[in-house]
Image 1 (cartoon, rainbow, N blue to C red):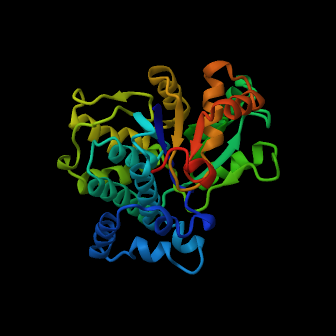
Image 2 (image 1 turned 120 degrees about the vertical axis):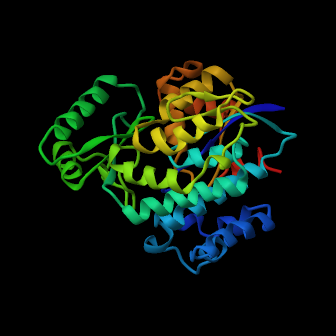
Image 3 (image 1 turned 90 degrees about the vertical axis):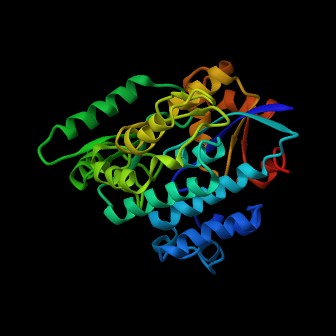
Length: 343
């Protein structure tokens, strides 16, 4: 049996190719019905209806109040689908909104309460829609570490943020990518300050607010008012948060876990790169399993391992060699990889 760290994806991972993901993969019809009932009570469209739509539309499926529930359900369904006779999960982490999914996968909240947390926070962010996000790479296409370039870009961000009426900050440290967040003036200033790369960067993330910055404090405050302490308990599997801190089974203060989830996690930068470093070094798993939906997080996971010199990986070529030899990374959003870990 192989050991694995499970990684839960965040916003932007349920797209046109993921339409129908729940109908194809979700293993517990009764649980999905309970998720649907939760949304129906508050006047939201059921996940099963959204997932079975004739076509994907950004205006419907990418909205925070819909996307958060779809992504959470797809993630949790994949976690349930992992074959415990093939894989022993030793820790769970996530990217951004994926932290809410990780809470449920790791047993710190029930599946229903995890859904309530994710759906509530997605809805609150959609209603407020404060600021936006942009993504820009600091690694080259060969993924060789260039920390001087990262420092240079963060210097540009700090200079823009110091201007009157401009807000710009690091939102997510995502492997070889910087996810930045701010107001319109700050985002436009960054776009004007850097060179276009690969025909698509700097890239605005449609439908995304200024996650993981102080701009989200009104959302965090409403989240704390809506989501009580009774939702949170002890994890059953170690959880690695967006600071790289580990929440251990039997040694977690549920009040502190709630305070982090509805406080720091919302308004401070999310260090996914650090979370992966801790996952690798503290748990030394045989596999890193990325649940669905989507397949876009694999590059950031690989880059994070390279940046931390995991098993001697120095660039994309050395990662690909190790991946070909050992199958280090398994993306459940890819049918050919899913079979290696699913029931």
